[in-house]
Image (cartoon, rainbow, N blue to C red):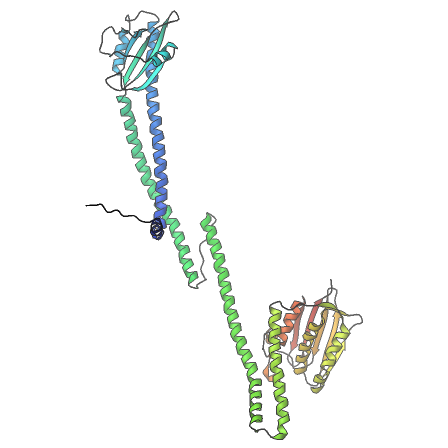
Length: 483
């Protein structure tokens, strides 16, 4: 039967890998354990290698020490005279030795079970140079693995032969095996402790991430009133701090959006209310004229009323457009130095008839040389709005237009002795379409004072209101001098 092979295209494998979900907790554990395992393996290999070399070097050093004693003994007596004492001592430590001459013939012991040792030319070269030959593990020339050293000895400065000491490596191997066993136990214990510590650290980090995830979910659902615990311990604390700042800004933005939405609704309601009356009046007059329901004697009056209401609608639309231009910084001022008398006289002349119809008088008080720095057209617009309101709520009174120069600004004061404004309503008169007191008359504030406030601010100036019920109202405009 033919074998069927299956292969996964690279793209499909990548998609499957991408869709594989591994919890961050297990990723942390795996990363910690992988690092520890690699570190343990490297340290174990280095430690075993070091212990192995150390043990064999120690054994070789021990053999060298005994070899020096035997050579010292050979320097005083001929071979075989008094080396038997070394045999018993070294045998107790499982060490064997021989003494050989230049032709590799064994001089001592004369007979024994020590196998003949054939040194290679390279090894003989080491001995001939008067150096000690050290072989840590030899498995070829003996029946078992041994460590041996071969040390030269000289007579009359001539190489006479050498001493070879050998010891089985089984004892060293057993010691190394015991050390490896102890090392393995220590590694397992350390690995277990590290695993517990890694579990604790991973749980701590994951719990902090889960708090952030929960807070992020709340943000995505529109709940911006969240706060994460902050700290200066690590980057998580910095991230929590930045997250809280973001949440606070989103909360502020959401509140601002709500305020703007409420203002939009209120604005639509106010505009609808302001437009309903003139539109109703115009529609009624048009219907009456079309159906001949208005008497001939009243037609002129009806047409005049429709014209006035139309102008009122046009004024309302123009004021709205003007207000939005000012708020969006689309209005550019053309500032110049203006004579105060000239400006106030324009206001007096344009509103003379309107004031006269209400029995009011407009009086100007200026000092010679008073100069106002600002945009002529916009200043006229400001003063016209304020004086019209003064005329509207004053009957048979006087409206004073006064200027007063200060070191850093020029004050323009519009004061009347009309019905005044309640103290608690003074801060509300700058709102669009706000009416301070409908019982005071049938006139409208409209957007006039809102535009006034914006235009004064655009001039880098200030405007204040002082008023008392039934005692009149005073508007004080402060405009900075030309720098």
